[in-house]
Picture 1: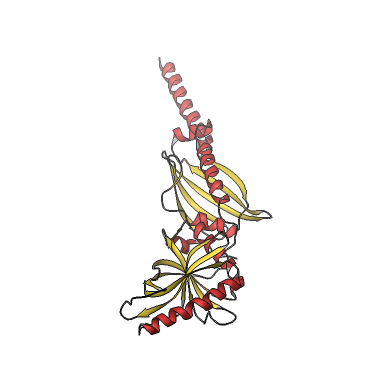
Picture 2: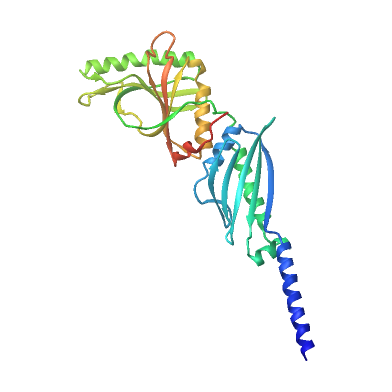
Length: 314
């Protein structure tokens, strides 16, 4: 009878040994990679990834949070519902734009069932990464094509001010815009003087429309004093709110690329426009050359802390 017990004990020991060996041979982790070339500036792609909000929906049933950012890689954490995975985006310049490699890795530790699933291909990480990566590449390819990497800007809260202005409309050509300012601002200044008010700051132009070859705007001056009764010109408030501010130094003819950079920055940072853009002139826009030094403001909404997470351009 003892020999039966010995055989059984031997079989149990063998089973334990085989199970232990099998466990050790099972994969401790599973990793998948996906790569796509995005025909957009590398800095815009990095900004979009860095601006990922906390607990962002990566794909159905999967959330993502950004952890660490450098110029070349952005580390994230994926909550897969049944576990977590680390996610690394590696950005490499390419002739067409930037190559984005996504590497997702899930560690199993002592979870035998998860390791068995990985060994049999049932983990499901690849399918989840595919769905999220497809959506991501669509978002990245929808970013603007303008590179904002050299743009110098600040983010400020702008207060409203009493403002007397003339509504104007002109062609989008630089010389037409300069002529419109030369004609509009003297009329506004005359209205302020006639009503015995005080000019309370430099000239301000508020864009109300830029389409179909026309530039529509309000050209005016902030003032102090009792609100007047006006004819021909109007009184109101300058725009207010959270804004991206850029100091532009150069002629009217060259200002459009700066606007394109600001728009690209806003989009790549997952922000939205919130009201009109406007300019505060730091010199005299009625001079023959027009203004060559101004502050440009774009009102924004959204979590602008994302701007602080954008990797520095190299």
